[in-house]
Image (cartoon, rainbow, N blue to C red; front, side):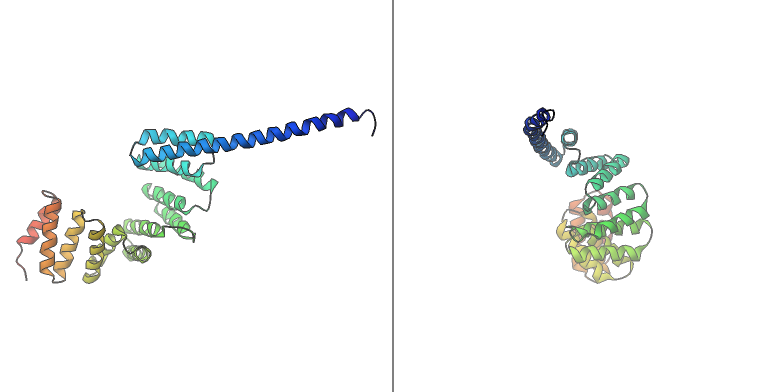
Length: 257
């Protein structure tokens, strides 16, 4: 080794520990940022549960400032934009979520809902199918239900019924899928199937007067007059003065067979 190179090697020897320290410092700082980001997310989530939308929004923004790849905070922001009917911003946030984690089925499903609200029904169906393509999707019944609602808008009732039935196969207690399936069964004259479906809805959502009204009509068409009158009374009890109550009252005035 020449005399001329010796000081340079000494400098490198002194520099290596400094570089290691700097790298460790950056790593620790990043861990702190992520912990702080997670704290803001948890606080934002608690605000959101309490329906304090603006404080929640602020906390999620703070979380993202600390960790731009915080998938859950971007998703939460998308949800806030959605409930505010700011579908353009909701779309942008969900696309950020999928850029961070393309294998997040909940985001594919939610983006489908955004497209549905924008009237982009074909794109919505495409995204619901993308969500359903992930075996790890914990709630695929939601995507099937959303598909059914889109098919109803498109007037494709057979496809809609298949989607609602698919949701019920996964989650037999899905109240809204059962309600929509019941209405379609009733239209098709499958009265007992309609009764069974509406019973699922009223069991899960006992305060939903409209479901009790549909169940009463299904009972009546199925010759179950006692059950029908009980359901009509339930409608009037739950929603006095409503159009559903008025219809129930009118049906109660009809002579039984």
